[in-house]
Picture 1 (cartoon, rainbow, N blue to C red):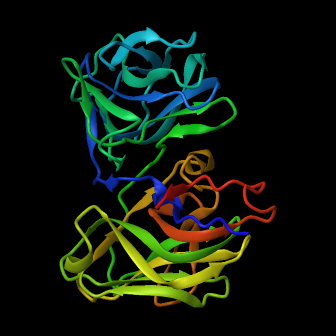
Picture 2 (tube, rainbow, N blue to C red; picture 1 turned 60 degrees about the vertical axis):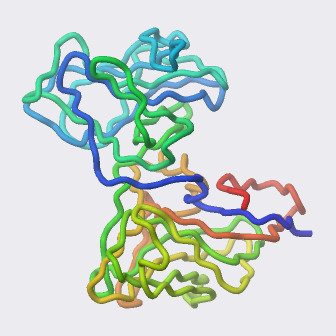
Length: 347
């Protein structure tokens, strides 16, 4: 007996999202800080705060990470949470960085806290400082909430790549090196990008959602669904970007229902069909497998690409920002079977 509910399954089941271009925030004086405010998702022990250093200037002084309680105004209070103590670090260059707390935080699900990155006692300067990457993936509202401090705390739209890690490796937040994606057209290498994925249950697929950073006017593309034998089992063609897409948004493609089989491998891709107008599908790159697995269905969806219908190249630490619309989900043990589907958005 299948579950007759329409759901969006995959990385793009994060609702109400956009993907911005590369942005950063300068931590170049004594007051500058960045943070995410969020509700603790699980009881346990948080031992690290992670973030992306986008720009490295000169010889920066030491910085620190903290887990703090929230003040009455919803901003970081400056008080350490859960028995934690700050973790210090000396920047060494650009890239993703996990910084261990000086003392781990013992955390309780539902508590409202902030993960904060800022300078220590020696103030940075514009010539000797770092910029934290804050390219956003996610809605302008909801949790985690992005915060910046200059002369005071301010709430900023988006969901930047700042995350926390528990002592068992579990990650909460967006731990991403890039949310930018890659531009291409039919003449480029590659000219087809997307995700390889494995379904955990029998299900019926009737469409897909594909996310874009941007697309040039008049661009055209195909959304394709392949089976493990590399046969196209469903597709939809968009012949003009103006009909389908608003910049930094998504497109829902629909087709006749096809049945997907539990434990089978499939590929969902965007294939350019225009010779000059480019498309830029959303693509997220992760620093490690734990960070990828924090995304909806992260262990089951990984990046894939190819050129001129040739051999596929799969990249484990990337995901195209996409998902499939499904119905009639049947687990091996019946409804509510043993293996969950984490990345679900009910339609």
